[in-house]
Length: 410
Image: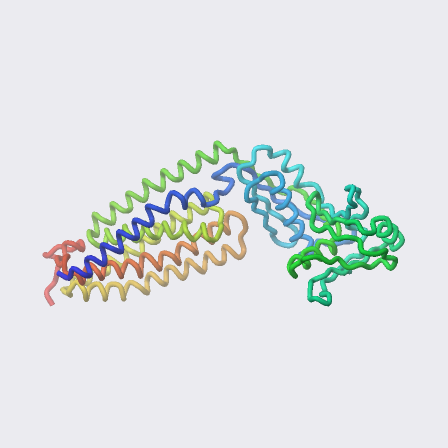
């Protein structure tokens, strides 16, 4: 018996399961839950220009979505999910919201760009600026600056004369974006905004000024509301079903495949933990469709193990040694597993590309699950079972679910 390989196997298993057991409670508490699990509401807006003759541009749609996210943040909503869809739609998902009507009324209001004096008086609004005239440049010290131009030169001259030496703050809704100080009276309608900006900050401010008041009217196309109690019930029932199903799967693998089944159980636990860890790193939101994809991924991982172990059993029955059967079984089953996984990744990629909302979440979870399954249930599993076979501790075919009477002589 090779004690070094057996010790290596036990050490790897103990460390792996120890890390999983130690980190899982904290990991589960940090994974973001969707509104179908936490409660809240979802709205799909259709954006339309307020002024006739204008069109909804990509920039105006993105800036409006960012404005909605900032409004949701200001209302106390934790981690709002705001995404654009197509050319004129914005989807807003807000989990854990109790005062839904108040938040919805706040979101519907068109965004307002204003320039305010020290007393808070609105001196100019977004429509006072020449559309598209704002540009980002650099001064002599290579600091980013924003060049702007107004429509009414006389009005701008009067404001700059009155507020000379005072700040003229820039606001989007009630959020202050910048507070440049008026350095001189400007009579030609042009000015530069300077400050300690990074290039990205200057570009964002330039885009907001160019878009003026973000003249987009938002109409609710679709709404969905989930109560906190219902969401909690869904989460509890899903977790309960997942635990029961997982235990039955692990029991099945151990009973029918013996030693390989134990290895499969270890890799399946590792696989589930890694999927949750990747979701946490991605800051992804876990929803009911995502959990369904995770459970389906577990089923596919089990399927990969069954294909592999059945092939190994066939090789053992043919009279080959355990090590030869293991190598041959893994080799011949790998292509079948790869073909199945590649076709699933392609189909999920199509779903992600043409789908939206829950469909994209399901597809993304499936892709992540398949990739991690290849890492754990194929490569990691093969590594662990090879260590056991090479330790010479489990020599009998019965340990691999094969009866002595079923083995054919070569």
